[in-house]
Image 1 (tube, rainbow, N blue to C red):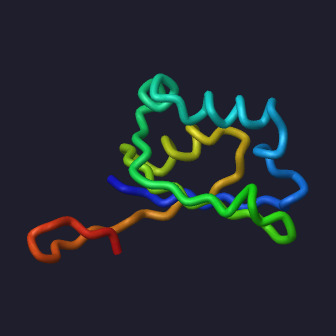
Image 2: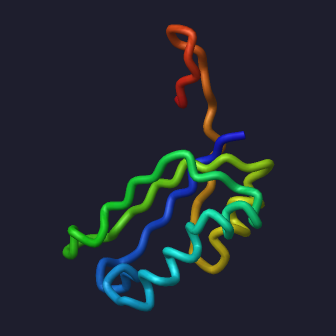
Length: 96
């Protein structure tokens, strides 16, 4: 199943602004951690760190057995998890 995990934080609290924060995110999204968590990162978009004046948003399309697995993967990082639906267009799966 595909899920969309959406994360928002204030620009001033962005983990990507520090070396330690970058290391934490690199470990979180490491191939081994994702495999151990039973999730697969399909696509991602993050508005940071370029945008420093407003809230940062991250959108992560994840493959997982259930939404709880996605929430467990992100741990203390607050995310809203939504179920993605797919449809066939021109013979290919398209996320809607």
